[in-house]
Length: 211
Image 1 (cartoon, rainbow, N blue to C red):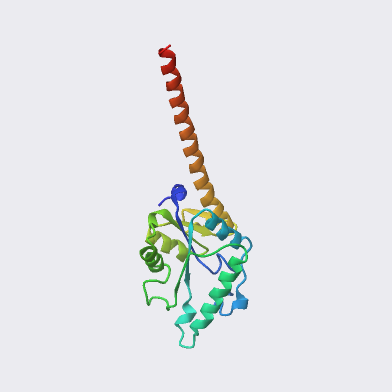
Image 2: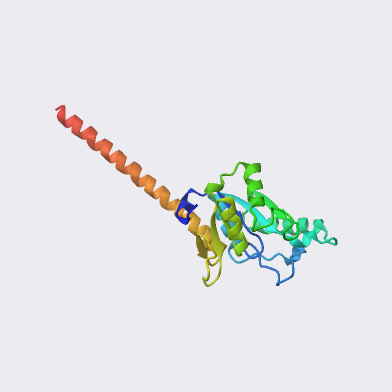
């Protein structure tokens, strides 16, 4: 799916760390609710998707859960905090998927498309009318493998990593999608107006021929 088809998007897949919230330091993980800090404008961007009737689906790798000492309730608590922070700004996630596995041990860990494919099966999503947004090359690769459009978040530009579009943050990505959809509505309205004017003109000519 090419970037120009963003006007057809119905579902937006979202990475979590580095896309919606501040990423943990290299080699570390967000393991406590207090560690969740939303990135500027992220909640409002998700709320804009909600308001536009687009589905927002979270897909996140959480490899730390594969450790024997990991406590899954910590992940649940972190997610609950994320949901609350989004709700505070009128935003919500329609579904959440996470991969708790170590690298090379499953088919759901990004860059593989397992989480996206599962979401599509369980919610009847059309992947050809979806877009994957994330801050990492693996997000782009997962989206490509699933057949979605891809938007890479990379402040200051840089290598597109094969993404259909590169923007600085989630707010800019959402603006790109909603702008494409708005332009389609404008073209449809102009088409309807032109058709109405042609119809009215024909009606006028017909009345004149009958006088």
